[in-house]
Image (cartoon, rainbow, N blue to C red; front, side, top):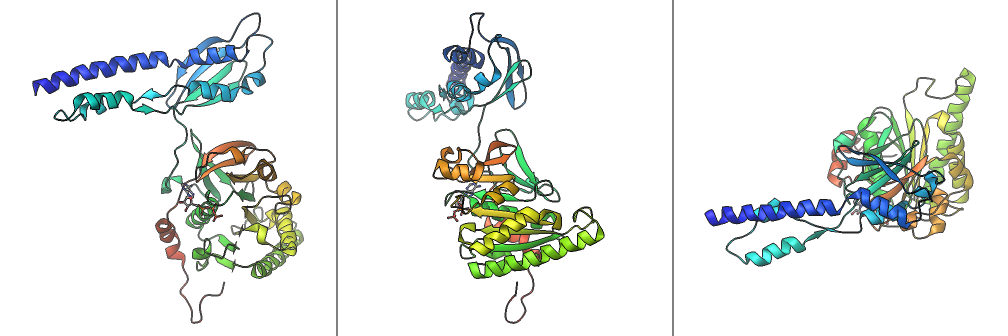
Length: 399
Ligand SMILES: Nc1ncnc2c1ncn2[C@@H]1O[C@H](COP(=O)(O)OP(=O)(O)OP(=O)(O)O)[C@@H](O)[C@H]1O
């Protein structure tokens, strides 16, 4: 017993001193300064000068004065150098808990060696801002690969969760931006994300939601929602999709005429609470006439209460016509295969460089954010939709 106490205390001393040296060695300010110098971000007058270091709950902020003659943009252009530099040394995972778990009857030397050799990859993230001073916010940890859906992620009304950045959960308000493009190569989480959106909308607005679901991937993904009383239309092949879209267009025209006659600009001002959400997956399989209707919904649907969620695995200028893109501001883009595809969705490259992680996406809302979308299990979907399933009449449900 005494032997163990003595050994644990001496191990704790080793762990403590190693921790001290580790932190000393990983001085982020020194690294930032060294990287800035190495990147040529200095003038004859000198280099960046630290003004203040502030420790916050989620991050540490380093505030610098930059020498006259250098711009913030020049620092921003080297952001990746700073990220790589701050992460360029993995740490040993040395802590007291590991020492306490040592089996003293086993090979102690080997276990201690393993503790010292077990290295943890650094995953620091940075944010750079300028307000007369150059601010580096350093977050210790990047994104997890899985954020299981949880009711705390629910928002309110027509605001839905989109995904986590390394600092917070980003949301989207369909009242502010009515339509959304969702793109991504097969297997990276597009369909799961659509199911998350439908589930959240049903949960938050069961009495005001009207769903029009077009699932051209055989109906398997959106099929479970078709028996809900919120589902007005469901189609799983392109002819059916065309019929549904024609009906939507007629209804939209009728609602717009009605608003016009009353001299009211949109359904919101008319005090109408219902919203019609049109989900289309896979939009590349729509025929030309259907795509023309989609363009019309994207252009005029907003005032009539129509919201379009337009998903594709094959983003090209044909599947995402310029008129659709011009009218759809919000984009959620999972990993894509090529830079050209990325530009078809985001107007710039980047989606082809996302890590191959399911659920990892770029959310474009004014600027681009890398997010990990929440993952909702089938069981949780069933619980949400269960109370809304219609009792089947003889001959089945007609949506
Ligand atoms: N947000 C997420 N977090 C973690 N894992 C996820 C997430 N979304 C999806 N996955 C995993 O990835 C798998 C594929 O996702 P999904 O079916 O949505 O891909 P997809 O892009 O729609 O592919 P396809 O176009 O072939 O249907 C899921 O079965 C799940 O295991």
